[in-house]
Length: 85
Image: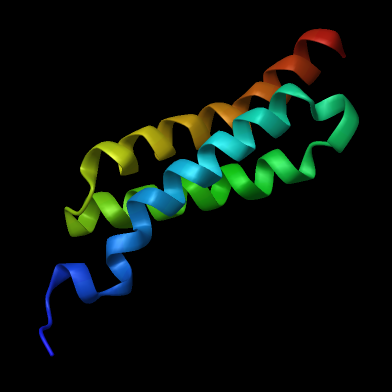
């Protein structure tokens, strides 16, 4: 059995961050239907997994994209609520 970066759970930080970020961004766009808790939860998880993946140095592009989309998903409902409220 070989051990290395491909065998560790840390190799999933990039794909998980990207998927969670995209789901959070989609939920943020439809926040009036699904509420704002789902974009906050998924966006926060995307940012956390993205930063952990960037620290490990695995799948850096996916980690960066997941972090950005997660951060946008967290900030979008806040900015929208501030502009409308």
